[in-house]
Every structure is written in C-alpha cells, then in structure tokens.
Length: 265
Image 1 (cartoon, rainbow, N blue to C red):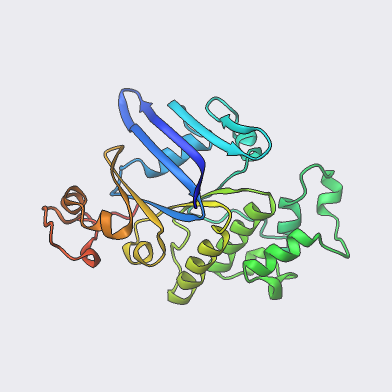
Image 2 (spheres, rainbow, N blue to C red; image 1 turned 90 degrees about the vertical axis):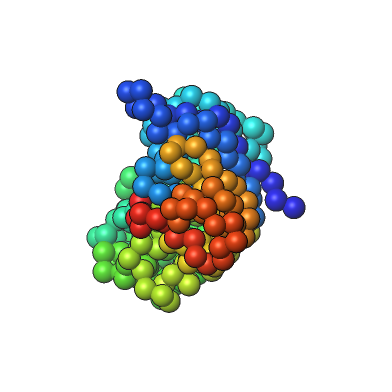
C-alpha cells in the first residue's frame, strides 16, 4: 500500500494581493509518480517553490520521516528542507559541467566531507554512487565531463544527484523538456524505478508522457486544485475537459486532453 511522504494542506501563496496558489491540498505518496498539470499560470511551479522554501506561503507542508515522524516544513530554510529529504530539479539541469559524472555524484553524496575531500579524485567510489550511476544509466560515462553529456543524460545525472543525497521526495520540473522519444521513454521508466520507495512529483504539460507514466494526476487551474485522480478519472472530468478543450465534453476520449491554449509552462 502507498504511504504519504509529503502532505500539503491549504497552501496559499500571495503576491501583492494576487493568489498564485489558492488553498491547495496535495498528498504525495511513496510508490507513485504523481503528475502536476495545468495551463500557464496554474500555480504548478509556485507550489513547488513553496514546498522547497523558495516562496512564502500560509498553510502546512508536513514531511513524514523515519527518524522524527511528521515534520512541519513551513518556515524552514531551503537547505534545511533539503536535509529532510526534499529534492528538486529545474527545467534546465544544474550540474557541475567541468567535473565528471562520477565526481558530480560523489560531491552530491558528500555531506559532511571537507571541500578539499569533495573535489579530490578517489580510487574507489562509495557503493551508493556506483549503484545510483547504474540506476540512471550512466556507468559508461563515469569519467565523462558532465558538460558534454547529451541533454537527457544531464537530466538523469541531476536526478541521480538527488538520489545519492538521500532525497525521498523528488519534485521534478519538466524533466523531459527537449528530449527525443527514446530519452523520454527511458526517463519515464527511470521515474517509476526510483518511485518504488520514494514519492515522485512531476510538473509537466506533455499529455502523452503523463498518460504513459502517471500513477496519479492533480490538475491545477488558477492556483487551485481542479481535480485529482487516475489518468482516466482526470481525463474524463468535465471541468478538466472544459479547461483543456475550451468546452465541456463529458464523453470525449481521454487521449484528446490537450491544453486549449497549448500551454507550455
């Protein structure tokens, strides 16, 4: 059975009187890939900013931890939130481009080591780094500078850096942007693999990718939750169809669910 890893209750983000996020409740469960979708301005990225400490909000974000039980994250600094196992990627992968794949992962796994020790080449990598490098499919690129990796490989490396840092709630912002078909399929399989014992949330507007790999979907619109459920449940929801198709068609097939304004963010 799934277990809640992160619970958001009545999250509101206000920018000078404009509610970018308006009373959002969201639960991210271990064992699922939870997609957050919606048109431009729906509040998807702002919600993630709130969870990770980059946007002030009212409401509650509670992280379930094995060591301390339920921990309230509201008011904590960004690095403290990360230490509680919340990992986040952005639309453009952030890696150390002049360092190798192995060094990037080793640094990400190196909490508590001195700066010199972090940068020093080591004859033997920790098992965690070796295992994650295999999981993200970059073992053969261990000695390759991150800056010359293919676009998709950089995204996988950034996900790997979260994994070696013990993140068990991953918030991924458009992880397949700019990828080709094969890279997208590999990424989808990777997300399901890492979600086995973690919670993975994906901010996305690619409906084909969502239909292929979502365990659960939350649709945001005008800062509020429009619907939450399985792909079929959300696809056939009248209000979701209205927002995405421009008119309500309760009998419309689920594979027609595309943003009416061709939203790309």
